[in-house]
Length: 95
Image 1 (cartoon, one colour):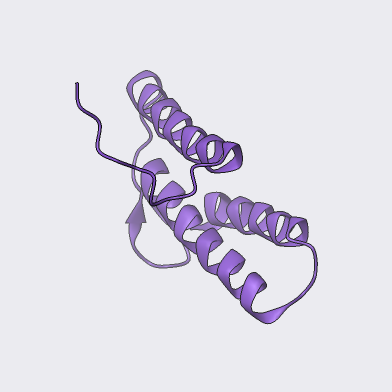
Image 2 (cartoon, one colour; image 1 turned 60 degrees about the vertical axis):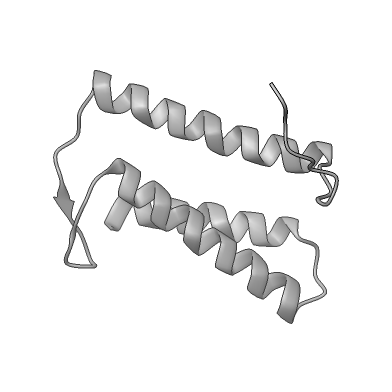
């Protein structure tokens, strides 16, 4: 198989681990959905969401939190990770 030239992007180990973690999470969500299907739930947004929807909202929100953190502060990035963890808990609990 001929793979495309990916030298234009900095494929470092943290980048590879990040994408591998997201792929593993999506795989785990697929297994959970088959094993323990969850009914749609209406939360504070007023829309029906399932596990995958809440996961997507968490990923998107975490990306925005990290981008804002990088752009607005000089503080260490792990504080943004803690905020993202709290955000993920809140999304999976109340959305």
